[in-house]
Image (cartoon, rainbow, N blue to C red):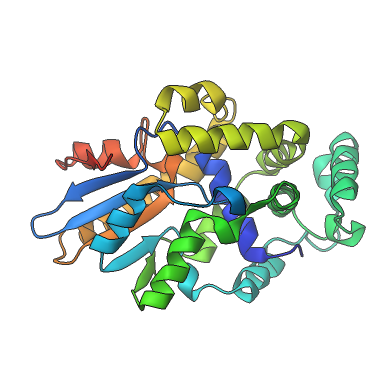
Length: 289
């Protein structure tokens, strides 16, 4: 089932951050008695480029609790693998070929063979699972590693510091976003995972550079149109999750301790982004740059 089931989750999050137009990686939001630091992240990084921007250090050191999309401190690979086996397998009596059609199946078969994915796994799982798995394998071959990503780095540090960690959503809520897509939209998601793999490395490295620099124009020029051709996926991965997370973040702002909340960068910006939603509710996010 791939090298690390948790890596699939990080691939899902990276897809969400590729189109980000973040002007800053970390924002400070003042509550009545505390501060919530809201950070946009890249969830897969190369070991040679894993140092985090300085704003993360300041926000982490000022916070008493680390909050992530998923509480990685309490999630094991067995948890993810078990959920995927239960909810992401092809229904009995069906097949991947039948669900996505012969032309798509042959494309996926060629891509999976090139990436070393066993044929039995190709035929076992639903299209959304294979999309995550193929993305994970591609990023792995290019040296992008979830262990070097922002959340994994911060989670390891929090564990060492005995700093509490929390999650904005459960494993079932996160993976259920893709499971709930229609059959055709799942097939389109799988198309994204096998399209133009040769360009993946240069595009992702450009995104990481723009993210570090907070270069909104560059990010928009690179991949700002990515989700406009697939609004159903954007709504499921970004807009709807933001609306679910907003009450939780605003509850943190009524606490007395400070929090660092880390989410994929695309969740922060644009129409329906967390920064816009918080401003509408009367908060004033301030860039830490």
